[in-house]
Image (tube, rainbow, N blue to C red):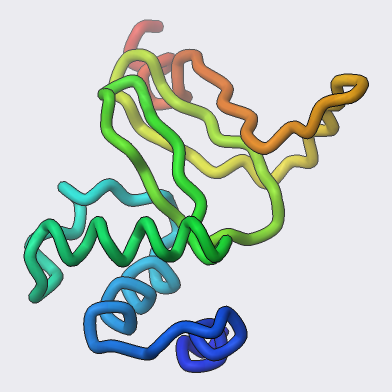
Length: 124
Protein backbone atom coordinates (compact mmCIF):
# COMPACT_ATOMS: atom_id res chain seq x y z
CA UNK A 1 0.00 0.00 0.00
CA UNK A 2 1.46 3.32 -1.04
CA UNK A 3 1.56 5.98 1.68
CA UNK A 4 0.93 8.87 -0.69
CA UNK A 5 -2.19 7.15 -2.03
CA UNK A 6 -3.53 6.43 1.47
CA UNK A 7 -3.12 10.08 2.46
CA UNK A 8 -4.52 11.39 -0.83
CA UNK A 9 -7.57 9.07 -0.71
CA UNK A 10 -8.46 10.45 2.74
CA UNK A 11 -7.99 14.09 1.66
CA UNK A 12 -5.14 14.69 4.08
CA UNK A 13 -1.97 16.68 3.63
CA UNK A 14 1.17 14.54 3.40
CA UNK A 15 3.58 15.62 6.13
CA UNK A 16 6.86 14.07 7.17
CA UNK A 17 5.33 13.01 10.51
CA UNK A 18 2.38 11.28 8.83
CA UNK A 19 4.67 9.52 6.37
CA UNK A 20 6.98 8.40 9.19
CA UNK A 21 4.11 6.99 11.27
CA UNK A 22 2.51 5.15 8.36
CA UNK A 23 5.82 3.62 7.26
CA UNK A 24 6.28 2.10 10.71
CA UNK A 25 2.75 0.68 10.86
CA UNK A 26 2.80 -0.61 7.28
CA UNK A 27 6.05 -2.47 7.99
CA UNK A 28 4.81 -4.01 11.24
CA UNK A 29 3.32 -7.48 11.52
CA UNK A 30 1.55 -6.69 14.80
CA UNK A 31 -0.18 -3.80 16.57
CA UNK A 32 2.17 -1.27 18.17
CA UNK A 33 1.88 1.07 21.16
CA UNK A 34 3.53 4.48 21.31
CA UNK A 35 6.12 2.98 23.67
CA UNK A 36 7.09 0.46 20.96
CA UNK A 37 7.98 3.13 18.43
CA UNK A 38 8.91 6.27 20.36
CA UNK A 39 12.63 5.66 19.77
CA UNK A 40 12.05 5.17 16.03
CA UNK A 41 10.29 8.47 15.35
CA UNK A 42 11.61 12.00 15.14
CA UNK A 43 8.48 13.80 16.35
CA UNK A 44 7.34 14.60 19.86
CA UNK A 45 4.60 12.69 21.65
CA UNK A 46 1.95 15.35 21.01
CA UNK A 47 2.58 15.29 17.25
CA UNK A 48 2.36 11.51 17.22
CA UNK A 49 -0.98 11.44 19.06
CA UNK A 50 -2.41 14.33 17.03
CA UNK A 51 -1.67 12.44 13.80
CA UNK A 52 -2.86 9.09 15.17
CA UNK A 53 -6.14 10.73 16.17
CA UNK A 54 -6.55 12.09 12.64
CA UNK A 55 -5.74 8.64 11.21
CA UNK A 56 -8.39 7.05 13.43
CA UNK A 57 -10.97 9.67 12.40
CA UNK A 58 -10.23 8.91 8.74
CA UNK A 59 -10.28 5.10 9.29
CA UNK A 60 -6.64 4.66 8.33
CA UNK A 61 -5.61 3.29 11.72
CA UNK A 62 -7.51 1.12 14.17
CA UNK A 63 -6.75 0.96 17.91
CA UNK A 64 -7.61 -1.03 21.01
CA UNK A 65 -6.55 -1.17 24.65
CA UNK A 66 -4.71 -4.21 25.97
CA UNK A 67 -4.25 -5.79 29.40
CA UNK A 68 -1.29 -3.50 30.09
CA UNK A 69 -3.59 -0.44 29.75
CA UNK A 70 -1.69 0.73 26.67
CA UNK A 71 -3.44 1.65 23.44
CA UNK A 72 -2.22 -0.35 20.45
CA UNK A 73 -2.52 0.81 16.84
CA UNK A 74 -2.43 -0.90 13.47
CA UNK A 75 -3.33 -0.09 9.88
CA UNK A 76 -7.04 -0.60 9.30
CA UNK A 77 -7.22 -3.73 7.19
CA UNK A 78 -9.36 -6.80 6.85
CA UNK A 79 -11.26 -7.22 10.12
CA UNK A 80 -9.59 -9.78 12.35
CA UNK A 81 -9.48 -10.77 16.00
CA UNK A 82 -6.58 -10.29 18.40
CA UNK A 83 -5.37 -12.75 21.03
CA UNK A 84 -3.91 -11.13 24.16
CA UNK A 85 -1.95 -13.29 26.58
CA UNK A 86 -2.98 -12.72 30.20
CA UNK A 87 0.47 -13.81 31.34
CA UNK A 88 3.01 -12.01 29.10
CA UNK A 89 0.68 -9.45 27.38
CA UNK A 90 1.80 -10.57 23.92
CA UNK A 91 -0.65 -9.58 21.19
CA UNK A 92 -1.23 -11.79 18.16
CA UNK A 93 -3.30 -10.98 15.10
CA UNK A 94 -5.52 -13.99 14.44
CA UNK A 95 -5.94 -14.71 10.76
CA UNK A 96 -8.59 -17.36 11.34
CA UNK A 97 -11.99 -16.07 10.33
CA UNK A 98 -14.14 -15.50 13.39
CA UNK A 99 -17.74 -14.71 12.55
CA UNK A 100 -19.33 -13.03 15.49
CA UNK A 101 -22.63 -11.28 15.06
CA UNK A 102 -25.10 -9.76 17.47
CA UNK A 103 -28.53 -8.84 16.17
CA UNK A 104 -28.91 -5.07 15.66
CA UNK A 105 -25.26 -4.44 16.57
CA UNK A 106 -22.07 -3.71 14.67
CA UNK A 107 -19.08 -5.70 15.95
CA UNK A 108 -15.89 -3.71 15.44
CA UNK A 109 -13.40 -5.47 17.71
CA UNK A 110 -12.90 -9.02 18.88
CA UNK A 111 -10.31 -9.39 21.64
CA UNK A 112 -9.68 -12.89 22.88
CA UNK A 113 -7.76 -13.22 26.13
CA UNK A 114 -6.07 -16.30 27.51
CA UNK A 115 -2.65 -17.94 27.76
CA UNK A 116 -0.44 -17.93 24.65
CA UNK A 117 1.36 -21.00 23.35
CA UNK A 118 4.75 -19.92 24.74
CA UNK A 119 3.40 -19.35 28.26
CA UNK A 120 1.31 -22.54 28.06
CA UNK A 121 4.39 -24.62 27.19
CA UNK A 122 6.36 -23.04 30.07
CA UNK A 123 3.68 -24.22 32.52
CA UNK A 124 3.74 -27.84 31.34
